[in-house]
Every structure is written in C-alpha cells, then in structure tokens.
Amino acid sequence: MYASGVLRDGGRKARGGHQADGQVEKMNQIASMETFNPNWVELAGHKQPRVAAQGFLMISEFIRSHEEAYRLMQSNIYTIGQVTVHHLKSKKPTLDALEMIRVAVVAMADGAGAMVDDMVDPLKRLCTSRHPATRAAAYETLGVCAFAVLEDEQCDDAIDFIADHTFGVGRRYKTSDVKLGAKMEPNVIVAGLNALTLSLSTQRSVGSFANTHLAALLTFLDHESADVIIAAGRLLGALVQDAGGAMAFKQRRGQMLERVEELKVLCDKSFSKDARKEIKADFRRLGETLDGEFVPEVKTLTVQAKVMQEDGVMMADVRPLELELRSWGAMARYSTISKLMGSHIFTHAHNAGSPVHQMLEVQTCNIAGEGPAASKEDRKAAHAKGRSMKNDVMAATLDGYSL
Image (tube, rainbow, N blue to C red):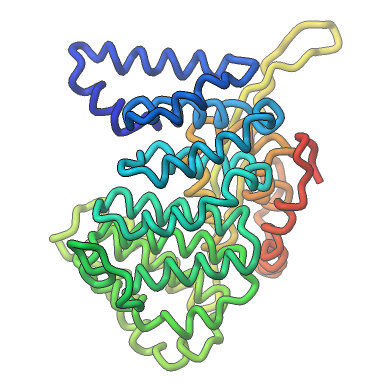
C-alpha cells in the first residue's frame, strides 16, 4: 500500500502485475521477520536512488509491522539517521526516505530522536525544492517531526518556517522556477496546511499564530482547489477551537461566518460530487465549532489477537476500539497516523506501550463498551488534557512499556 513511487511505476509496467505481487509478498516476509536486517541500511545508503528507495521502503515496512521496532533496531538507529541525512543532502533524494522518517517518528516517537537530530536543516532545504512532490513531502515530514519529537524551540521554529512558506510571508523563500505562497501548487499548499494543523495540535497557545496568519488562511477558503479549501477549513477549525478568543477572530468574524455559511451549502459543480460532500460536512462541523459545540468523530479499530484459554486452546479474541476524536487536532492526528501506519495501526493502537497508543489518546478517548458518549464538559476536559499529550509521549519509556 505504501510502496515507493519507483516501485509503483514498475508495478504498473510489469505484465500481469507480477512485480506488484512480488512486492506484496516481500512486505509480508518483512512483517514475519523477528530481527532487523542491517543490509537494508546499506541499500538505503546506495548512490543509485532506485536502490536507496528499496532500502528505505523495507525499513519503513519493518517499523510499521513491528510494535517493538525500537528494541529490535536500536543498535542501528544512529546509523540509519546518518545514512538518511546523507541521502537527503544528495541530488536526488527519494520520497521513500521522507516517508521512512515520518513512519519512524510516529511509531517510535522519542526513540527516533537520534535519527532526526541532524535532519531539520536538510528538510528545510527540501522545502524549497523545485519538485512539488518533494516540497509537499518535506512539509509533511517537518510537520510530523514538530508534532512528535522536536523540542519546544525547534518545534516553534519549524511551525513558523512552514507557515511562512505556506502563506508566502517570506519573500526570501523562492526556488528557481516558482514563487511560494499564492502560486504554489495545490498539493504543496495542502501539505503545508496539514502539517500546521498536526503540529499545532500539541501547542498550548496558538493565539499568536492565529493573529499572524488568519487573514492569509481565510484567502484559501476561496481557492480553486477543493483539497486546499478542505485543508484550510480543518486548520481554521483547530484554531477556532484552541484560540477562538484571539483578536484576529474578533476582527474577521463576520467575513469568516459568511464564507463558512456559503461552504456549508456548496453547490459549485466545478468541484466533484465527493469533494462537495466533504466540504459541506467539514464546514457544518466548523459552523458548530464557531457556535461553541463540537460533534466528535468516532473511528472504530478492530484487531484479532490469539489468546490462550484456561483449557490451553488458542482462541481468536476480537478487541474493538472506538476512538472518539474530540477535537480538530485529534482528527488531524488520526488522519496522519492512519495514513502512515496503514493496517498496522490496529496493533499499535491496541498496545498500551506504543507511542501510537499515546498519540491517539486511546486511554481517554476509547468509548468501546461504554454507555452514552462523553458530555460536552468531559470532552472539553479531555481536550484540555490533550494539550500535554506530546510531553507524555516523549516521557514514555523506550523499552515497550507504558507510562
């Protein structure tokens, strides 16, 4: 599902899809392995981008499919970090390397800290690449790092950097063939907005951010791309929920309400039917947020685990999780983590010692088997508690045990 761009292209060209089938089999083999293969690190360090992509892809899949990935590859973490930094500085860095960083940071949290220490500057450089796909992936990666592992000062700097690029604040940010900001490609704008929504979800105070960037953010609600409108609406929802009292909101409340009401009943047929449906749903939720209400979104995760019964017989135990996402930030976290982890999100979320379990706030947001959904007061209290989630994750022990 998360094969590299190189492999996906190859799979399409292969007759009968044999190469794609072989890739699936290889991923299954990696998932069944009990030890980390250091040869993958050598592949990742290869000069040929196609070969390096294979190495990063295998490392990513190993991390996804093993709940104790940090313990199994701890002795290789530093080397992987150095190889990755060298690769990011090369002439043709691959998207697989950037995805590996995101997967490692989400699955291992502070355990991946040694990997990303020297990556921030190379990631910022890639944010000015003339290749839109690379810029978008760099924004996403920097945002995930800010969300999960960067210390406060580095985190704030990364957020400001992404915001300046996304909103075109800094004229100094330009490449040889494109000016950033209003003329950015839609996928790059979406990546920047999503990175901001995710990274701001762990910040205690976002009022100053709203005061600085709200005017520019509102212009994206009139963008020609449905994806940009959706991403801008979700960032706006997070800002309203966490900093609704900021001066910028008071000054532009009328303008904002008018556009939100228009998008709640959008009938512009230049957008696809699915895009219109998603926009209307998001902006109805945003309208409720502006009115002081927020209807949580519930995601159900179910995994089968083999457990030993008293009579010695192995039985399949179905353990459901129903996660009540109680904020725009929580929805952003779930969206990012689910895309990175794929089907492996089930086992990581069920493991109380996994950083994914902490990031999704499973302990407080799982409503499976409970009675009625939490009250508005309970949801607000849980959301306030969630502001310290990042510190809780970073304080978690790295040997697979919970806090």
